[in-house]
Image (cartoon, rainbow, N blue to C red; front, side, top):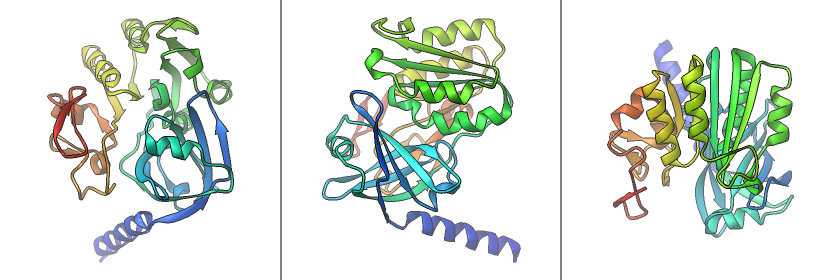
Length: 284
């Protein structure tokens, strides 16, 4: 009877999350030249885990998956959007007071651990790492946040990171490909230096998949577990349509955060290929 009740409760929570809700934008904050953070209130989102995502409906345009970049216990929730396509460009033009639709939160998020942890965000991939870092402040003995971007203009959340980490054992490392801020080069080069000199208990990462694949390979080399948030085309968000499949894994339902063990099972495709809008496998 208890198992039945648990199943009913689980089914009910999924049905509630999958119901489209319209929300009013409370704030639209410019983070850098192409990226904005949109804030709204939703009582279901206050239960979200870091790394989970929403299906965001932009009326008249599209519905797209976006990870949560802010989760608060009063339901104030945020997403951080880089204007790279038609839908995200329209979303970034939204103003305070306008309405969007949301479903979710969906998927499996990051699991905070104790010990020495590394948080690695490439570009806007730093977004879902922010609510994760808020959790890690309570569990980890040391947190190293690494942010890798193309140039100084693409940097995100520097003030927020500094505020979050000011009272804990921590380090922040920024890399720019053109050398305009922090270390010049790729964030994975700095990761390799750290792994060669420190015992690390967990690596968390989100960003471009070639970067995450490099992170995964380094982690395997140094025998460190990884949790990586993958991005795929998603239509349903609940494991039905198959548009986000990689190997045997449905990213929307089994992920978007995958463990080292899951990544090993899809290593022939991870960082190499994905399904396009027609369902055809294409190179990354």
